[in-house]
Amino acid sequence: MRRLVVGITGATGAIYALRLLQAVRPLPDVETHLVVSPSGVLNIKHELDITRQQVHALADHVYSFRDVGATLASGSFATTGMVIVPCSMRTLAAVAHGLSDNLITRAADVTLKERRRLLLAVRETPFNLAHLRNMTAVTEMGGIVFPPLPAFYMRPASMDDMIDHTVVRMLELLDIHIPGPRWDGMDT
Image (cartoon, rainbow, N blue to C red):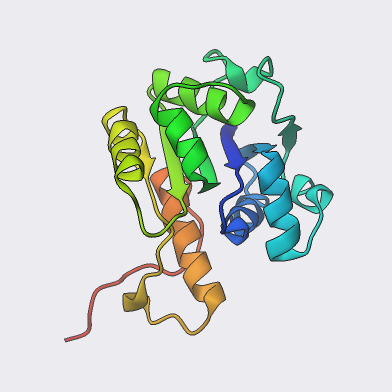
């Protein structure tokens, strides 16, 4: 069983988290461990018009944002990695500076210290210098900064196509492979 930690913060893009959880739900060898920040809960309600409980139902295990003593806060809790999707600039800054003041940032810190995959789907535009420096710091620590940008070379026909392609790419970086759109090269 591969354990995947999923953090949802208050940045825009809750649909990516929802689709990611939906995509791995049927996989028998992936167990999801979910933490949602209070701002993440607000964004889920605003952007998706669904409840926290509906998102929780997609995860195998759900933890309180404030429970820094949960199993996710320990390196002895082996995981395949962690994705923070969407990742707010506040959460990025906390991870970049090792501020483990909630379970999402603590689990991210543990992921980095254990040299596991940490993927941050940062959501902000344009970036200021603090954002760029924080992204650089996380990258230097071994994290992967993954702004969920659409790939138009795939010729998406809908928003769903763009979201699904991004989710497939995120999961592949965590060594979780699902069916979905991939680049097969150009017909020339």
